[in-house]
Amino acid sequence: MKQTIETRINAICNILNTVTPEEWIVRKERAAAGALCKGMVSIYSPADIRRLSASTIASAETNRAKGIKVRPTIMYAFYAGRFNPQCIGSVAIYTDDAAAECARISRSTTLFGQRIKSVSLEIGRRPFVDVQFYETMPARDIAPHPA
Image (tube, rainbow, N blue to C red):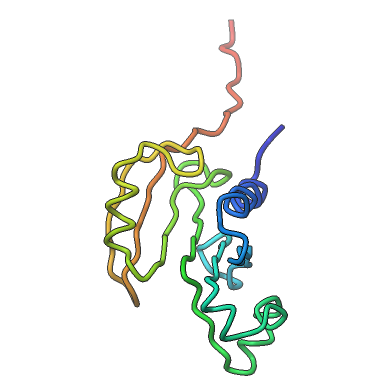
C-alpha cells in the first residue's frame, strides 16, 4: 500500500495522541493554502486549555477570525522531501524550549519511525528545531534495454 504524506501525518498524530497525557489536546491542522508545509500537528497544554474552552480550540479557524490567538505548547510542521515529494523530508518543531528539544532529538537516531539525517536549531520568527530525514527514493519505471 502506497503511503502518502497525509496518511503519514495522520499516523504521527495518532502516535502523539497515545503518548501525550490525557488532559492535553493533540490536534491535526491544515497548512495554509500555498504553503510549503504539508500539514501540522499541534499539542496544547492544560494551561492553554484553561485559557480557552476545548470547544473554542476545536474551532481554531473561527478563533483566528475573531483575533483569539492560542499558541500551542509544541507544533510540528511537516514538509515534503526534495527528492521524493511523496514522503516527509523534514519537520520543523516549534516549542518554547527549542534548544532543549534540539539536544534531546540529537541523541536519537529516529523520530516518528523515520531515520534522522540531521538536527539543527534554527532562528525564524521564533526558534525552532529543524529535523531532516533520510528520504526513500521513489520507485522509477525503468524500461528494459533493447536487445
